[in-house]
Length: 471
Ligand SMILES: *Cc1c(COP(=O)(O)O)cnc(C)c1O
Image 1 (spheres, rainbow, N blue to C red):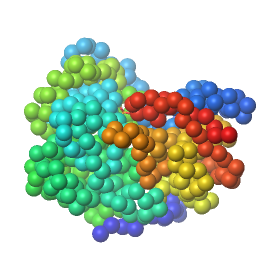
Image 2: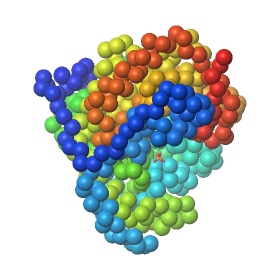
Image 3: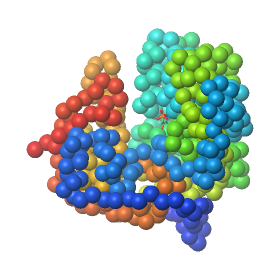
C-alpha cells in the first residue's frame, strides 16, 4: 500500500508557505545577452545546448551535475585539504561518511560517477554477459557495453508512459527480470543494475518493497545487486512521502535500509552530495573491492584519492552529511515540484508525477507535428534558449544513440527535455521566469520546425552532435 501522491505544495507542506533552509552569503551575477546574440550563439553551438558557452546562458538548467552551491561548512572543509599522494586524511573522512550513511564495507574513490561505473563494469562483466536494469543511463550502459555486456531494460511499463501517475515508476518489473534470467541463464548475469531514482524516466523512484523483493529474487538465482546511488537520497524522500510505514523514518534511516538490500553502489557525488566534482564505488564483497581498488590505480589515481584532490574529498564527506538532512531534501524536491506545478497548471505536457531533480517536458506532445527523427526535444531545448537564455538538455532520441547491432537510431518512447534544477543555486523567482519562458515557447509551438543532424560523434553523441534547422 502506498500513499496517494500529493497534488500541490499546499497539501504537501500545509497551508503556510515554506522557505529554503539556508540564506545566501555570496552571489554570482547573472546576465542575459540579447536575442540577436542568442541567435548567433545557438547557431555557433550547432543547436546543441551542450556546446553553448556558459557566459551566454542566463539560467542554467542543463544539469544538476556538479552545479550545486556548497555550504560554508564545505568551503571551510576545502581549506583542510590534505594533499598527500597517499593516505590523505580526507579520504578517511570520506570513507567514514560513506560507511555511516550507505552502510557498505569498502570504499574506492573515483573522479566522478562514470569512473566508478568503469571500475565495476570492468571488474564484473565478461564478454557475452547480460546486465538487466531499471532503464538505461547513458554512461552506465556505455561502460557495460564497453566491457562486453548487453544491457536489458526491466523497468515497469508505467515508466515509459509520461502521463502514468504510478508513485514508483522506477520499480523493476520482477517478471520481466525473471524472464531475462531464464532466457540467458543466471551465470550470464554478473549483476542487476538498479538505479534510484531513475534519471531517464524523469527522476522516478524505486520503492522499498520493490528493492526488498528484488533482493529475494536475486538471492534465489545467486545474482548480485548493485545500485546506482547517484540520487538515492532523493529516492529516500519519495519513500518517506509515499510508502506505507516510512513517514516517520528519517531520510538517513531510509537510505541505509535501502542500501542494505544491495551488494554495493556507484555514486556520482556531483548530484546528491552537493559537490562540484567527485564520486565513489562502495562494495561489500572483498574480492570485488580488491579488483576495483587495483583497477582504480590504472584509470583514476591511487586508491586513497581516485582522481580527487584532498580538499574535494573533504567537501564531499561534509556534503554527504548535509545531503541526508530532511529539511534539505524537502526543500530541494519542493523547488522542483513548484516549477512542475506552474507548468502543469498551464497544461504544458510534462512527465508526471514530477520526479526528484528535474522537470521533464514531453516534447512529443509539445511538438506533435515533428517526427522523432527531426529531434523534437533537441528543437525544444534550442527554442527555449532562443526565447530566454535558459539552457535545458535533450533526453530523447539523440541521447538514446544508435543500436550497436543495426546502426539505426534507437527510438525511445520518451522524447523529453530536462529542466534540471541545481541544488541550492536558484530561487523561486528563477523558477517563475523559467515557467513563463516555457509557456512562451509553447504558445509559438505551431510555427516551430525541426532539426537535421549534421555531425554525429561515435560515443555519447548527445554531448557533441551538431544540428541545423530544417528550412
Ligand atoms: C550523472 C550520472 C552518472 C554518471 O556520473 P558522472 O559523475 O556524470 O560521471 C551515472 N548515473 C546516473 C543516474 C547519473 O545521473
